[in-house]
Image 1 (cartoon, helix red, strand yellow):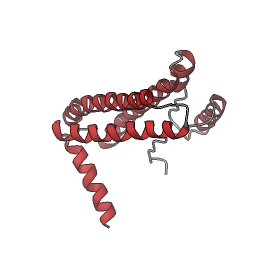
Image 2 (cartoon, helix red, strand yellow):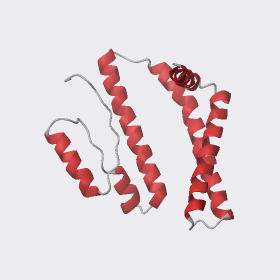
Image 3 (cartoon, helix red, strand yellow):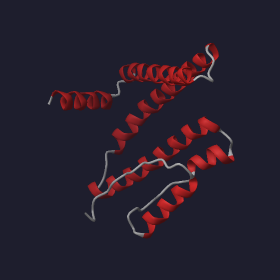
Image 4 (cartoon, helix red, strand yellow):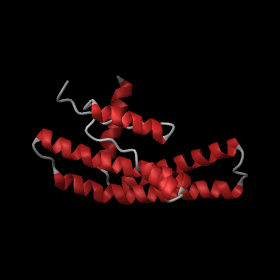
Length: 161
């Protein structure tokens, strides 16, 4: 379908694979935009290691969101910018608190246990994810992020049939 718009996010094992895929997609006009640089810059150039990987994903998602908004606006003939801005004004602080709390949880587990063992690393990730989810859920209630309730309702309807 020529007028169908898709957003695809994937990870590849190395830069060469990413560049090969990107080049093929662009040459065949199967993709309008391909981003392979964010993780490379944050990890290899700025030497941010795992934090660089997370920052690279966040940068890629922010860019992809911007592209999607532009495409949606064009396809729909406009979007409700005020509602989007209002939602962002609530979601960004919630996301910041979520990230900080998850990082703190991971750091606490790292400080208490020997992080060289796989089980401890799994516990560290699980602790960060669980704390992050709880903090985001609390922030969604406190900041009245109604879109979270809309998503929860859609998921519940999906599972109920």
